[in-house]
Length: 332
Image 1 (spheres, one colour):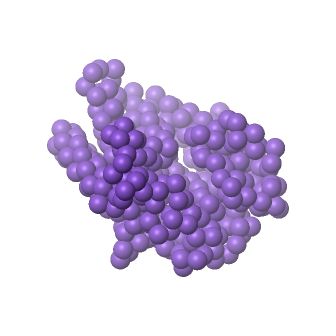
Image 2 (cartoon, rainbow, N blue to C red):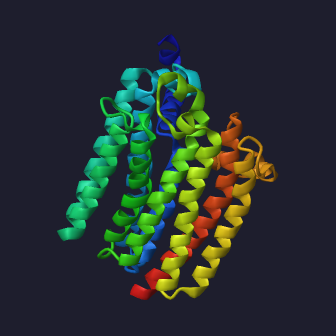
Image 3 (cartoon, rainbow, N blue to C red):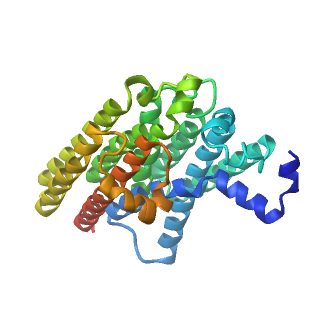
């Protein structure tokens, strides 16, 4: 507390922003952008650009930031072991200040989402507010007792999939049009992709999870089979994506997705064989390239996940942006 009170205003503001974990905001932006593109209805007007800006603020700094702030507050003891430099365990923010942090962004998120829902009106407005409310509720119960969904991977992974991969697409779509069936399918694919990534992201806290009794998949079945489970989900998502592209008559996209799946498998095989050092040829991309965006780690298995994430995320992003553009053109 002495350290907390000695911080200047600038450092205090930086600590509060860090509590909202800005790096995580990026994860929802592609889904939001693709949901808007897939609607095919956004116009180049100040009104629509303002709605788009509010959407990104709502799901980025406010929505995702809320879940990260709540997570840090309720995981204080765990972070003392796994991430002692975070704002609360390091003493830069007190527990009371942390509550003010996530309550403030919660109120801001609800105010903006209600305003947008009222502005849109009708069923679209109802879907929008339901999506945002669902995301905020899941963001809270994911970390907070008595539910604390993150304690069990069979509850936490679907919660992350809904929050990051599903409702983001739907919210962005209904912001400008009725829900496009193709966009709904992209939302489902992103649901499974987000699930698989959160399964592997647990590598970074494997030690703390085991000691605290959290049932992450890596604690239950070990690193190799955790990778295998996640890779199967990812590969099935890519295969489903290729089938959908073929059904939508987007043949070029189908070829892109199939090639992406093959590349992914080529990276997955060495990681499965050696969860600690597999695909080490990609380490430069993590250490010197994308490290600031996707994070860095001292845990070998988590480092392997980050190496895979560079390849997988780029391929999936390219394919879903192409798909969203083609869908949007179809509805223009």
